[in-house]
Length: 105
Image (tube, rainbow, N blue to C red; front, side):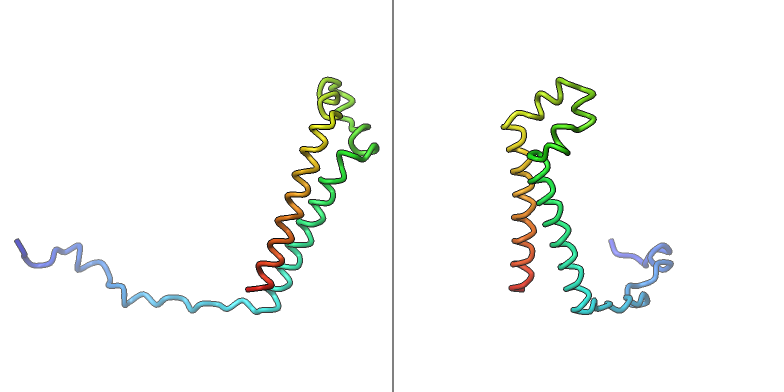
């Protein structure tokens, strides 16, 4: 049954009355700087996480590990150190992939 349009339909403005905001274009140089900083930050974090478990000053003399000896004994095993270093390598891999993918695009 088709009748006259309801009053609710009359009160809603049609889509053509709303002007879409103009699309802002991000300058290419700003995209490049953002990519460079993102890749450098990921590389720095990846290197730090990869190196940290093997650093005696940071890992073996960590105040948290000294306060909780059971945690320190777990953290000083080779498997845990390797796992943490692997996470650092994964972060480095993601940084390199991000740089290569955006360079090609």
